[in-house]
Image (cartoon, rainbow, N blue to C red; front, side):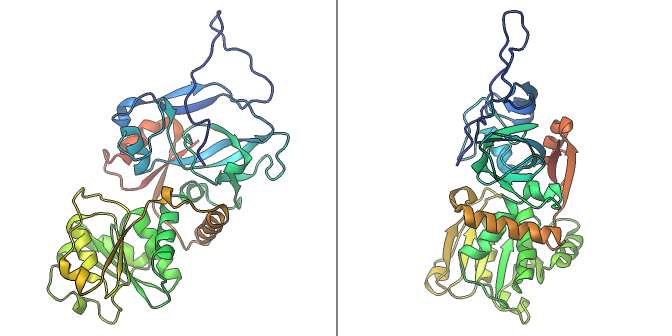
Length: 358
């Protein structure tokens, strides 16, 4: 369910240029990141003040605490994402907040509760968000806000891909490229928790030994660079680890071909991204003699029911609280939004996920 209030509404002024009076049951005025047209995010976004929003009997007003800048957020602003909110609009699709006030009919949430959205909620890059109570999900207050703010896209994608395509059991193996991404790091850790081996493929770059060591500490069984897999007998590299049943691809091109080569008979490769912008090439023999299946994954189209969503989120956040699920993030003050945006766009060399702190 999409938010009905994520679009930007300009301030309304009276004839004397003073702000019009609002009824008592309203949110505080909010500061938001707005874009009026699609284009380069560092050009078309602006931080502005927006007026209070009316709070009806079933509404909950949430004071945002943290919200990440995801690649999909950038793509939406650019206008290249499959789902594009109508402009002008407020950026952000993920985040965590604290209940500020509730409507008269709201019984399940109260002031001070820590909440995340229980459905896709555009407009999280603002200090106050008002939505129907059905769109908010109460979580454990001891959850670190940076993990609460980021659990419902990358970690949830990793979990669902591990559970929804192949019936994996302890001792089985998965293989993935893009292992250094947040999804990749989550896949490694979630697999380890379940006793599943992970084979991980990274790009050939300076410092690859340090990257390998980092991924091994997270729980990876084997980490290869792409060039290390440029051999005739890949099986000989696996030692005693079984060939993978499931492969995850977010790169495309040669990196996807390597995942396919590692899969066992009847294996499945799931594609959830295409960072190289190169097509996936699979040999005829992989179809005929290995019976390889190719699938696609887009979290937004999974349409998880509420019970499945909440169960998944609770599981992920419990692991985060226990220190068994972690990934690098950088908390950035909301008033430094454009600095965080530049880092998220790779313009300042930072590889950490940028999380806005309100």
